[in-house]
Length: 494
Image 1 (tube, rainbow, N blue to C red):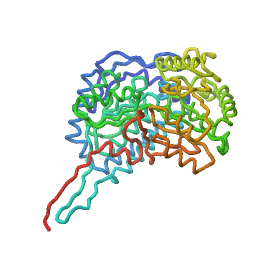
Image 2 (cartoon, rainbow, N blue to C red):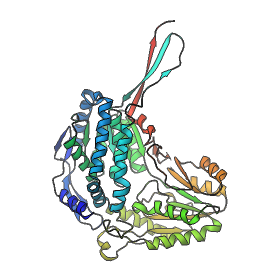
Image 3 (cartoon, rainbow, N blue to C red):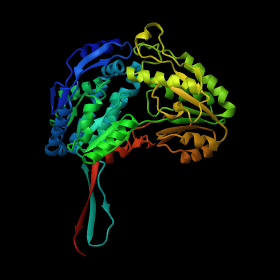
């Protein structure tokens, strides 16, 4: 751990540049300082890409796609993806250290959760390269109709700061697998794992120039990606507000295809017939508060049946009070720092609001124990007796803040679960399997977890309804987002 952290701190002292058309170049935008959220110190100073560089990158990526990228054979594509997976595994400790330094999450979370999965993603999509193809359709005699699956073109891949490399990998791998050129745009708060991965790719793989590009810039300059007519596809993970703006930009430009993975306010429902209630609470608490609560799919609303409500609240409070906030690289700590100052302050504002709307039963303040005063640490916070009209029950906070509400009947639980503008995920804990299936049908969310919140697999789609987004990531389902299907008719006579 310490070796990887020391290496990362030395690497961060090196000059950071943009990667456009197979070469490194200085940014031409404004100066930016990346801050270590654990202690407030500057990790790295660099120059962001300008809007003009963004458009230049899009032009070069489009040229590369037209001339070279789409001609790479399927066998070569699969080999490239497998090699990227190997590079990630060989550099797992370094990537994990960079992730935790910039994001503030525990080193153990980066090392065991995030980075290994990134490698698996590239291997998974390498397997799909030659298995996603067109079909022939049954049509009238004298005609042949078949479809061609073609790469969509230049893909702008905009990743968030909460799972920087993981979210980037979910976009890069299927896009390359289908033969596209890509422009990777990580968050300016957490660009380092993407930068280092591109360094590794540039050093170890012989890719056509312009097929893989990376821009580190802010949202203002990056908006040029969403308006550029040289971009055919945008995949975005982030806030619903920005996602809506992206759709407007697509409509105002070339109607580029859009995939949006946005916000959530997901419920986790506990019925009084829950089997192994203690285990259910442990799991739900872990999914809610791991990674400092900065997860779109986390269960931020616990709906608890009346006659077990007090029991569940007591168990949650006990667990919250046992959490140790602190240095992400100290293995004794169980919660790291919020990613950046703006998010830290936003969470604290919501906590203050919650104190006027509901009953605070755990946390509710900044953790300044020891050296934590230098960083962005917030205690796991739990509000009880939260009404369905409270803002903390309706708005995405994106931090370690949990709202708890009681319910009497199955019907009330469904009503409360659906009383949100989001529809990303929902959890149901019950010993009645018929009830579980009824609930799964009636809850308006893209992912339903029965008796274990947070089940994920690369072969299962990840998506949300309503204001949680458009389209799907993971599994075969994401491949259609990076391709276009062409229908071909042949008249050959009877």
